Length: 206
Image 1: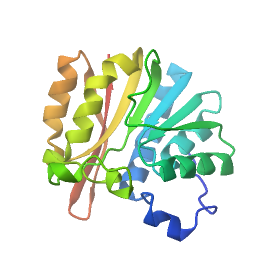
Image 2: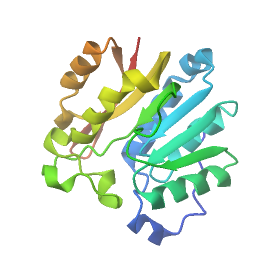
Image 3: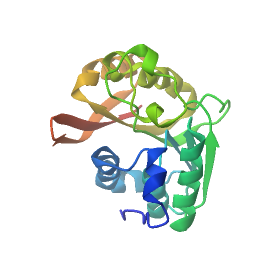
C-alpha cells in the first residue's frame, strides 16, 4: 500500500488536527499485511471512524479504488483535512462530522477502521471536539473505544472486518472479551514497540 501524499497540508494545520504518527502508519501497515485477505472480501463500503488527517482512509482508498470510502470525525477541521487528503491523492471520500458512527442508522460497512483516542486521562478530558478528541481516552484510555465497540454489531456487515489500534494500557484482552461477547473472533495483525508504548492492531470478524 502506498502512503498518501500530504504536501497540501500546512504544518500549522496540525495545531488543530492530529498529525500522522507511528500509530497511523502502524494501522496502514496492518491493512497492507492483510491486503490479500481484504482483496478476497472485495469490500463495497469502508468506514474510518476518527479519521484525523485522512491518511489511513486515503491509503485504503488508493489500494481499493472500487470501494466507497466514508470517514467520520467529531472535529470539523479533521473532516475538512480528510477530504483534502483524499482529493489530493485522487480518492473519492465522503467525510462526515459526527460522534463516532452515531448518525449512521441502517448502514452496514464491510470494513471499519478505528485509531481511537487511547491515552489514559481523566474522564472529564474526554468529549472535546477539537484536537484533544484525538488523544484523550479517559479511564484505561478506553472510554471512547468502548462506546464504539457497542455500536459495531449494528454497523459492521456480517462478513465484515473491524480493525482497531490499541496500546497495552488499554488492556486489549478486555477488548477481545467484549467483542467475543458480541460474537466476534479476533486476531492480532501487527504489534510494535514505539518509544515506551506497545502498540497493536487487532482485527475482529465473525
